[in-house]
Image (tube, rainbow, N blue to C red; front, side, top):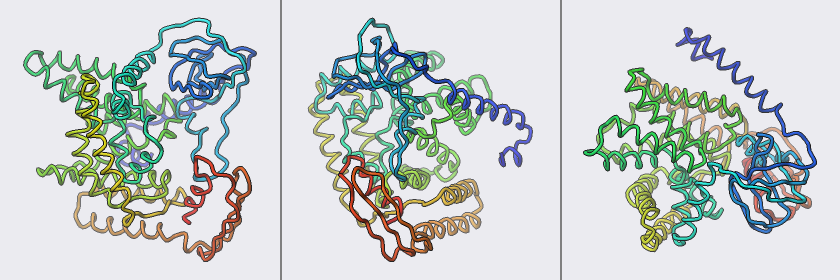
Length: 476
């Protein structure tokens, strides 16, 4: 609103129109619900897990739903099931600073969970999710040593990685290398252009690449980072061809606006938030990146991405590793030159699976060695939203201002604010007692100024580390 008022008052009617559309979309999503019935006709879509009991994402009454069956029967995308069961809303997290399953489902436009008592497979129909399902089966069958990485780069599916590995790459700040985004889409586009450079005209090249990117979106189930990178390339190319004079920042804004209009809760999706924030900050600080030395260029991009995502990484991991700024350069080159190209080659020529598996072992050994160095780890989190607002306000000003003197002043203000945020819990005047909602008893007594914090009982152990994350979230 401030930007429109100061810079583009001529866009005020567009702004009002978009805001009204956003409110209407928000109201529609929150009011249109699945009607309560005795039986539900559900079409199986994706996220199929067959363990003790089968679960999957499906659609019923044109609404998305999570389904938990009463047995471990085999289902595939397109199966139509007649299910008797109870429809329930997901429960929000009852402990602050922990994963909120309800918000996560909201980001996927899912409001209900269907717990089945009885189910019957009545028919089968074609759905787009069948394509990634069969590709997944192909990877599982022919790439036993490298399936985790191939699935990540082809299907944007990280389900093969264990929680320890995911926590390590998150701490090192290299999670973006495992999220299919601009790096991966850019590499695919470069390979396609190189293959067609002498055989196909530029116009036909663009058409073929557009079709391929749309197919890739289907294969990756329209993952936010892939959608952002693909649409950014498609719209930018069309803008140049039609002479619309749209900048990359304009196009990114347009994609963002339409995405949020389609799903107002998409900002709960961590991949969406990180993808758009990092791309936005890099485009905003483009003048800092334009330098002939490629290693320095990668280092500057890494620093910008690291600073931009810091509040979100701290929110999810409760800590950051400053060493990741330097290590990122090594990991980016290793991923770009070896891991990523070999992943696509292995998908096409699965005979390379054994060799690729050895390269992965070396890569993961480097990751775990780097992750074990905790000397540069800072454990903290921002305790309120005001801190986050001030942080991003200072960051945006720092990226936008090109005057050297003002840059130095803003950088000093930025550093001072960060250190104040780090020590803010030590000047907390409030004493409080928190009863933590876990199986069993757990009570946290917090004294003012962090002089004496006492945890009485821990409750039962759980896979989400609920008590630990709550304590870390309180900056203890």
